[in-house]
Image 1 (cartoon, helix red, strand yellow):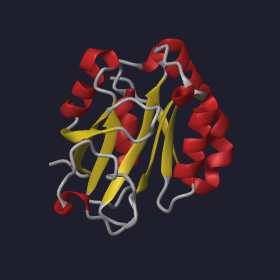
Image 2 (image 1 turned 60 degrees about the vertical axis):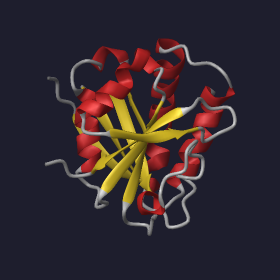
Image 3 (image 1 turned 90 degrees about the vertical axis):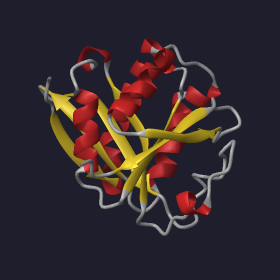
Length: 185
């Protein structure tokens, strides 16, 4: 297991880290994984990043080794008027989807550069990010086809469980919706 230096950021700090996040996105999503199409374009990703960071409760962590950024994760609290649950392919009960602005945090992105993958850096960033969260539970979307299911299996190993599928954007893939408690036993 490798450890990296982790720095926490709130929305006001986004200008300081935006270029690092975008560079890592391009390197990993485009070059490493070959994800193409409008949904994965850096401009669309930057629009989503700005939209997420404009919401109350947005935070991020970046990991560094020898001063070089190696990965990031970020997310935001689901507000009472969230649209997070609107695009479920099979609707969930109100008990699952009810939000009041303090219950659930959405992990919007977690990305680690190739030389640091397989060294528990993603787990370290994930846990460092969650350590500052006050919500009860965390949700995320994962493409079940990524890594032939290996990426979803990693989240399952981290305690997430699949609760359904959704297609949040007209040009996005269908994602598995996963959920777990912020604080694990």
